[in-house]
Length: 304
Image 1 (cartoon, rainbow, N blue to C red):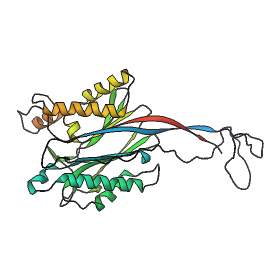
Image 2 (spheres, rainbow, N blue to C red; image 1 turned 45 degrees about the vertical axis):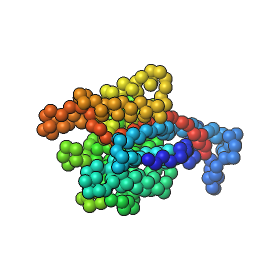
Image 3 (cartoon, rainbow, N blue to C red; image 1 turned 90 degrees about the horizontal axis):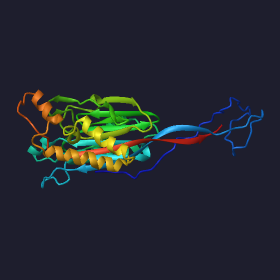
Image 4 (cartoon, rainbow, N blue to C red; image 1 turned 135 degrees about the horizontal axis):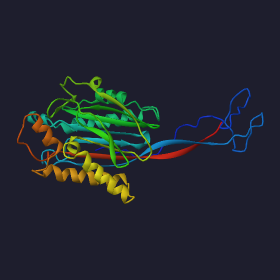
């Protein structure tokens, strides 16, 4: 698991005049004080520019496996660049003696490096994924989802069955689609795989202050219905406790509980029956990664 230091960032100040007056000196310049006036007598007053920022928390619960105690999921949170990501190493590689968790971990490490090299406030998740993919040399394969916030817009790129949802006012308003070749066989990036970042689904969504983004691997979404996630978030909102770290822990722990419930009618169980496994019931024991991000409004002064 990779978690970067969390820093808030502010966009560069732009230059505007809220009262419609423009200065006419030969060269535009930034005013040194709020009381400074333009040559035509118009006073400059700072504007309040509204924007959004991420405040996040996460929890990773690897399934018990003595051979792979770290599990096969990986994730990162780069709040400095308003970007998060999750990846799930594909377990089928274990039959060939390969720990796909090494691939997902290296992919997310390289994603973090690529994010930090992007322009501040203008991260391109598709380019991040491409760079990370080209620099990842470990054996194995993995799904991947990278999400960035730019102003009031979420931009995301997704390969496979990891993903995210957006909750507004306690109700899910969006959930990213799943990419899979067949039941339980997701698109995946990796060594000796035909899938590549060009197959990734690019997503864009307008968001508001107070929206909550829940991102995770299939260990989350296979074991929890939207209504269960909504209920956890509603309880926290009712208690006026919207701490994203606590939300991530509450959601992940219920997903873990459901994964061991042999009789639960989980999303995975329903998908299995739809695929022809007519008697399947219960959850899916798997690594579980949950990232919860609260989108908060902040204002920055801008003057021209």
